[in-house]
Length: 238
Image (cartoon, rainbow, N blue to C red; front, side, top):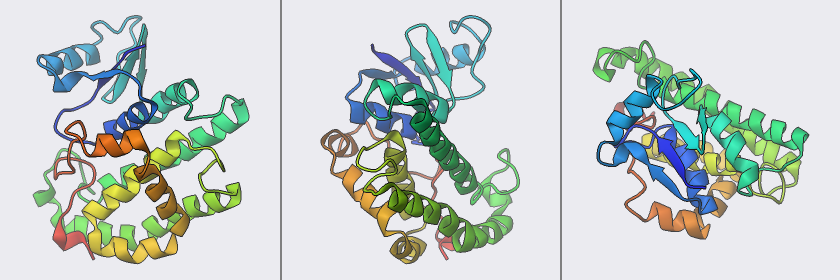
């Protein structure tokens, strides 16, 4: 099956968590909004055109898989995982992995808050004072809490991945989390990475996977920039 991924062009954002899974699996897919006329197709789909059964997605990313339209990152990965060797087929293990991915979702939302702590509709320049206060707390307390949790999960699984010896889509997401934090907060990352060696080891293992290594070196991977979730503002990198 060839998939159609719908996400905003020009930024990694939440869509990158899905792209990493598709790329690692070697799955064929179209990054629709990056193609000619693709934005119009995506906006039409969000209005319910061509998605069927009155189930329009609220926002990108969403994935078309045959007649299915699947929205929300964790939901998309829950579907793709067992079909592409990135999740077990056992219900209990799949639900546990989904819980871990939903925790990633929670963390991503907190990352977004570092530059938009008041409102998404305001520019960063309109909330810089609040962003600095929010980010100081985020780096001091929230990053260690989240990454420390995943580090413990990896340790308790027997490692080297969150499910033990088998890689999963959540491991790919941890790679993206570490890469994003290194881009956004390079100074702070040097400090907190020392405390989560298992998470960093997962990042390093994922980075060496052949398909992802090729993807990251290609033009298909949009560079980090100040329009995405992970943004580098030097004044926030405490």
